[in-house]
Structures are given as C-alpha cells and as structure tokens.
Amino acid sequence: MSDRPIHKGPHDLGGTAAGPIDTTDHGMKFWEKQANALRNTLTRKQVVRVDELRRAAEDLGDQYYKLAYFERTTMALRTLLIEKGLITETELKARMAEVRARFDVPAAAASPVKKGAGR
Amino acid sequence: MTPGKRTQPRTKLPSTYNPASGHRFNVGDRVVIKHAFPPGHRRTPYYIRGKEGVIERICGAFPNPEELAYGFDGEPAKMLYRVRFEQKHVWPGYQGPARDIIEMEIFEHWLAPASGRAKPASPTQNG
Image 1 (cartoon, chains in turn yellow, orange):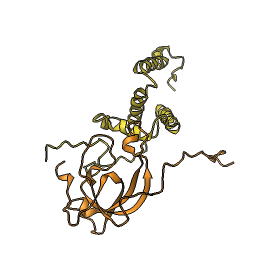
Image 2 (cartoon, chains in turn red, cyan; image 1 turned 60 degrees about the vertical axis):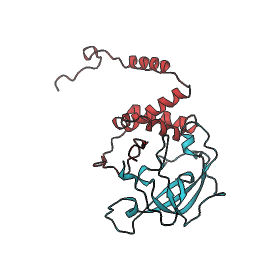
Image 3 (spheres, chains in turn purple, green; image 1 turned 180 degrees about the vertical axis):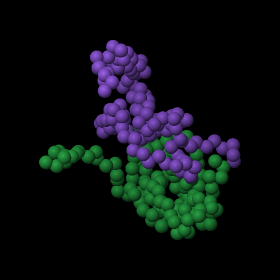
Image 4 (tube, helix red, strand yellow; image 1 turned 90 degrees about the horizontal axis):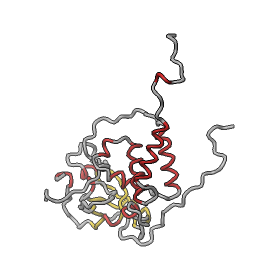
C-alpha cells in the first residue's frame, strides 16, 4: 500500500500545513506587467491554453515553490512556446542577451545624471 | 467623463459549456471519488480522492482539461458535477460543526457509484 506511487503536483496543497498567509499587496513590477500582457494575449488568441499553462507550471516540481507567481507563469509560457515550436531555446537566449545588453548601463561615475550636491 | 469606462464592449470568448444531455449520475446520487493517483494534469484534489459525497448539481459537459493540458482538443467533453461532502467525513478529527460541508466540481470519470455502506477510504493516512 505504501509502495504505491502517489503523483501529487506542487499545486495540490489542500490539507497540508501552510503556515500564515502573506496578504501584502506586492504590486506588479514592470516586467511582470509585460509578461502578464503577453500571456493574456497568447491565451486570448488561443495560441496557448490556460490548462496547458497550469500543466507546465505544475511540472516545475520543486522549483514551483521557489518561484514567485509571475516567474512561475512566465516559466510555464516559456516551456509551451518552445514545446509548440514557436520559439527555440537558441532564439530565446540570443534575444535575452540582446535585451540584457540594452540595459548594460555604464558605471555610476559615467552616468549623465548628476548626483545631488549634498543638498 | 468616467475614467475606466470602456468605449467598446469587450468581446467575450465563446463559452465551452454544453448543456447536460447524457449523464451517468443524477442529483442526490451517492458517489465515491476514485482513489487513484495517476501522473498528469489532474484537478481532483488529493485529499478528496476515496471520499464519498452526493451529487449536488449537474454542471454540464466541458472539454476535458486533462487532455487540454497537453495540447489536445479535450474531446470528448466530460460531464462535470458539483459534489457535496461532509467536512467531518473529509477530514479525520474535524472539529467544526457536524453540518459543515464542502462542495467541489469533479468530472464524471473521477466518480463511481457509492456501493451502499462502503467504508470511506482515507488517502490522507498514507501520504
């Protein structure tokens, strides 16, 4: 009986001790809004389905608990877009490098923004 | 001008709901939730598997999310029921009032007829 394989996804928490619930409104970061908009668009156009996103998130296993909500859903979206052949891992990596370079701002010393003169 | 008021109505996606035509169970039937733990995308909570409840309503037929989750069309659609459970039956040692209930929506393929006085299994003990 105890040898029976039990498949229980990380989302299936009912009845387990969960501790106190964080009810703070954390707001949304800029990237989270963008990722959410992309996910909503792709869901609305039925490129991906909510059911698939849920499955891809559940398949994150232990990583599911380590990630924040929007990280989880973004990881799920990434999995599905690669799975469906709409993007490739290589393309994604190249694009990420490109975007990262855009934010590769010079060191503080070279910043054109003047520091407040001790006011 | 009222801020936040939409100038155009949002076009709604068509509902996937289908009226219940062929259903195995009727309102009031006693059912037992399958005591199974298969891999895959499953929406029947772990803690309710093996428990006994009563059909509260027939929700209709919907594309099967267990198939939709893997990119298939979810056909054939599966009948969805709202099932009512007694909390004291679901949670061993439940402290609340005996009349407390919990209801959840479960697809037909997770249900079996409750056979008379079948003793309820408790999946929470072997977790």
